[in-house]
Structure formats: C-alpha cells, structure tokens
Length: 272
Image 1 (spheres, helix red, strand yellow):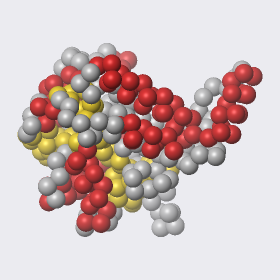
Image 2 (cartoon, helix red, strand yellow; image 1 turned 60 degrees about the vertical axis):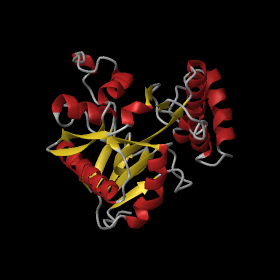
Image 3 (cartoon, helix red, strand yellow; image 1 turned 90 degrees about the vertical axis):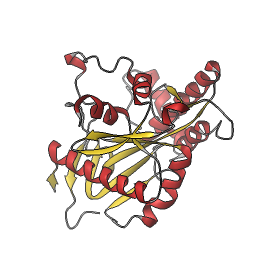
C-alpha cells in the first residue's frame, strides 16, 4: 500500500467535506465547520498550520437527520457515514464520514483500523444550571474511562503489580460487554435533556467541557476554508471563545503540534 502524505491527506479530507457540504445543502441539513477547522478558517482561511484533520458540528435534530439519510441518499458511494446508531461495532460517540478508498490506523498498524475521515460532532441541550451541567460532564468522563479501556486494552501503564492485577480484572469484566456498551451510555447521557427547553447546548460526546447559548446558531454565515466557503454559526466568536478562550492569541511554540497520531494509506486492489 502507498502511504498518504500530509498534504494529500488534507486534500482527501477536503473531498469528504465538500461531499458533506453538497449533501447537506441538497437535503436542508444545517451543519457548520467546527473546532479547529472553524478556528483555522477565521485565523488562516484554511488549516491551522500544525493541524491535520477536519471537524464539523450539528445540533441533534440535524445530526439525526444526517444519520438517517446520508448513506442511503448520498450519490457518491466512496464516502460512508459510521456512527454507533448505525453500527454496533463502532466505538465512538459521534459520527465519522470515511473515504473508503483509504485505510487509516490509529495510532499505528497495531491500533484501530478505519479510513481517512471527517469528524461529525453532535451538540445536545445542556442544562441551564451549572451544577447539573458539571454532573453531565462528570458522567461522560466516567463512561469514557471504561470506553477507552475497552477500546485500548493495553493503553494504560501496568508497571506495578497492583496495576497489572487491576487491569487484568478490568479487562476480564469488559470482555463480557458489547463493544459499544459505554459508547451508548455516553450517548444516552448526552441526550438527557433533549426533550427539555434549555437556553444552551453542550459537547457531551467528545472530550471538551464547554457550552454555548443557542442564539449562537440562530443563523449561519459563510467563511472561507482552503479556497471554498462553508457554513459557520453567526455567533462563531462566542462559540470559539467557549472552546479556546482568547483564540486570537498565538499559541506558544511548544503547543503548535498535532494531537493526532496515525498511519494512512491508499487502499490497494486486495485490501478490504
């Protein structure tokens, strides 16, 4: 297999994003470029120089519609949406759109096998009470510890005898559970307030502890990212501050690094 270099990887990700953009426009699904992708669009009109992935966001109603329609209605079958709601062997709490002409391993060939992807984050109603909000994030992080332990059974340090014994019993317990057991618990926790009227939304299926007022998403504008324009919430300034604080300040040099470790390849004729 031929390894995918960084610049080619970015082009493949933009191809996925363009397909999503066309599909969402055609099917009246609201989405926005999110997280570091949105930050890159505002500061650099493209990728953050040390970044190597693309993120988009959706509110729950549009996310559920996207899950329902994308794989069946998308004309370009090169791209596939994977989500726990669609695949019992999928481990993440949010969706990913894969380029099926590729193979990607995280962090390397001994890790998880998937494909070059765009992350699809979903944002749910967040309680207006800060204590209840913290409770949701605490529960998410608790479930995530078990989800990650199940996903990466050899991840944690087992140098001491006590840690080895604890890890042995934990792995023995997790083997009897479905692979997406804690993924589903995270998703159910995220949807806890879906039938309530709240003023804000939160990020309960990823790693960040943040929330934003729904007024941020009352309308959308177009912002430039890698020479094409994509949707951004009209309140993108407040949204980015919820993620990054004073996001226009330059990061220290030591923090200007990618947070992702992977190996990506073009799929050969005999690869599945």
